[in-house]
Image 1 (cartoon, rainbow, N blue to C red):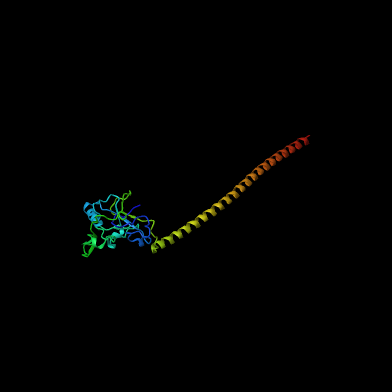
Image 2 (tube, helix red, strand yellow; image 1 turned 120 degrees about the vertical axis):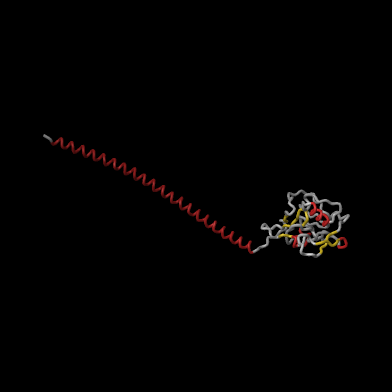
Length: 240
C-alpha cells in the first residue's frame, strides 16, 4: 500500500474509512483514481518539496510519495497516451488543505508557470503533527523515477470515451468476423472429411472392379486356350 507523506493527508491505495479525521478529498476517492508522485532526485527541487510538506526534522525516503491533490491542475500533465498522470517540469506541491490557515504562508508560484505572478499557500513546518495523520511511508515500492506515477487501479472508473466506444465496436466486429470464419472452417472441414470418406469408398469399389475384371480376363484367356486346343484336336482327327 502506498500512502501520501503530506501532513494531515491520509490518501493511500486503500479506501479510507468514513469519518476519518484529516482525510482530504475523501469524497472524490470513490469517483476517480488517485495518483502518487515520487520526490525529485535533484537536491534543490527535493528540498523545495520537503519545505512544502512542512514536516519538522523529516527527510523523505526513496519510497516517499505525494498524492495528486497537493498539486494544482496546471501542474499535472494529462496528455500521456497510457492515461497516467505526470508532473510538468519544476513544479512544487502547493495545496495542503489539512494545514490550518494560521500555519500557512504565502510563497511564489511554481517555477513551471513563470508568466503567472499569483501567490499560493505553502505550509509552515509543523513541530508535532498528529501521529494518526502522518504517513510512515516505510513500505517498499518499485518506483524510483521522480515523475513516475502509480495510479490507484482499485478506484479508477472506466469512463467511456468516443475512442473507447469506437474501439469496442471495431473489436466486436472483428470478433464476429473471426467467429464466422471459424464456423466456415469447421463446416469446410466436415465437408472435406465426408468427401474423403466417399472417395475412399469409391477407390475400394474401383479396386474390387479391377480385381474382378482381371479375374474375368484370365477366365476368358483360359477359355480361348481350351477352345483352340479343341479345334486342333478336331483337325487332327479328320486327317486320313
